[in-house]
Image (cartoon, rainbow, N blue to C red; front, side):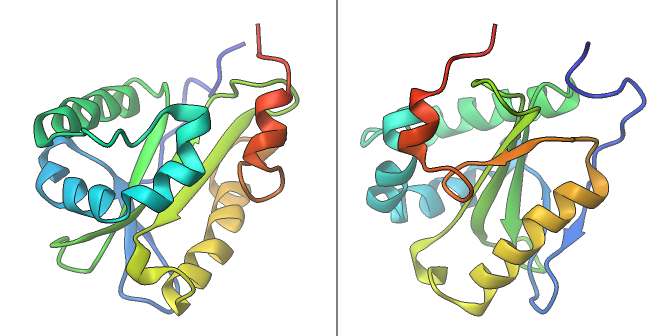
Amino acid sequence: MSWLPADFVHPVHVPVPGTDLHLRPIREADTAIDHPAVMGSRERLWEIFGPAWGWPAESLSLEDDRVDLLRHEREIAAHQSFNYALLDAHESALHGCVYIDPPERTGADAEIAWWVVDELVGSAQEQALDALVPRWIAEQWPFERPRFLGRDISWEEWLTLPRTA
């Protein structure tokens, strides 16, 4: 069985209610706004994602980020995994990301994680994104058992689960 139905069409623009932010699939062309967002929040992001993903490396260069975003763009086109950028109305700044991936660990049919830049931690925008993501996944994605990493299971607990075959 494939991870997603063959006829599934992924969303391409998702407004975040009550904010001027929206989600859209990330692209290689976003490197110039992604890199400062990631590196500006690197220490906190490493605490969250580092043990599981080894990301973002302290040495993440602009070119490394460009290559990573190109990989994400290709994976999105192939429906292998999804990385959505959290952007302002003019798409002049990246404020975070949402990842929707096939499960690496047993017990779920998708694994979802997200983050916002340090400046938005604790803000109304972060709260709006936190409210949106589970609802959006339930309403627009074909999953029956999504797992929200760092939300309904800690990253530490997730790392102890058996890997999928």
